[in-house]
Length: 187
Image 1: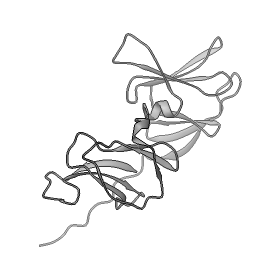
Image 2 (image 1 turned 180 degrees about the vertical axis):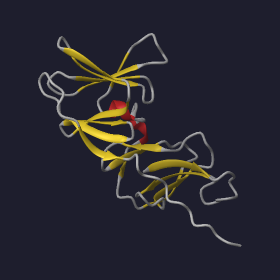
Image 3 (image 1 turned 30 degrees about the vertical axis):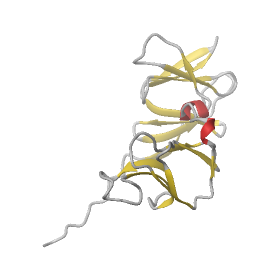
């Protein structure tokens, strides 16, 4: 995970100037790579592949350590336009700024469409054949020759054929998961 964080004031964490960008190997938050920032004008970054990242840095950014083993993309390359663009989604111009449209051509002529910024609604269309609407999908993506989506607290998948939507399989049902209770401490 790559993230930007702020400790509140520079004197609280003087080594970073109070703000920093870190790379951590989840589930740990311990920084295997750490850059001090000292302000909030830059910071953060994005993974550009399984082996490289781009750091949002400026003249105030300074390296403290980097034991990540990842290659840092040159600053001049500029940030990736977005994670969606990196993953093959294309923004379609629309007059409705509240509900922008993003499309991804997946297989057998199918188009996966997201309508809205976060969550929104999803559609699957095979132009000239059919359009399927999925207003309850919270997220969807094409992954390893299958469609994967989140709906109603479940992660689901199905294959797509030439003219059909395959059998739906539930990969995981997260509805029964509850946060662990913290033990009470007696004074």
